[in-house]
Image (cartoon, rainbow, N blue to C red; front, side, top):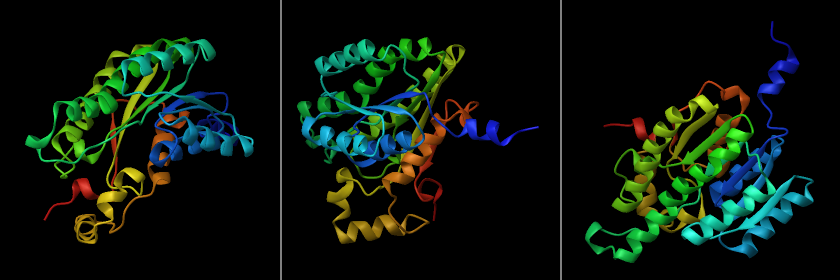
Length: 261
């Protein structure tokens, strides 16, 4: 028979350490805040040191165990530097959230080689290298959880640009492969695929009233999502309550991805 204490233990991250990328704003900041509220220590990563340190300071003022590690994960040097710092300070990790991402919206033939490479490096190379680099730290902790932040743009065409969609689709498949390959190490790997969320990355296109109305017309719940709603899904996948869930992609999209005429 379950007791209240055994149930409570499934819904806490106390004693766990999480690495969250792109954590200074938007979905990443919301994810970090959610994990902190559930008792985790959070190592927050972002490119702009001033923004990151300001955000982390606000969490620390609330008595939460947050740490800032500025790094540009679009570069090989930035990724290597981050992994070295993390391994030195936290030889064991329990959670990795690959959230950092960017986009440049253009027709396919208008992308420059530099733009193409930048999107791939930020969205996909970062997740690939961090997953491989953090895996030994998760294994040292006896297992843990990885969550990749994809997008419904990786599941369907949503006019965000072919390159962005490619990277987000690749994250879905990376999730499946790693979930199977690393299951014997008790490492679970899942994916969350948001639709339009109120974030700085989406603010530009959602500021176009005609486009916003079109998005809402295709979204059964008729609203834009909030970062905290994505964060809650990510946090659930990291909790002991989700211990038998791996290799899955959870859409947080107000019903968009299942909508049809």
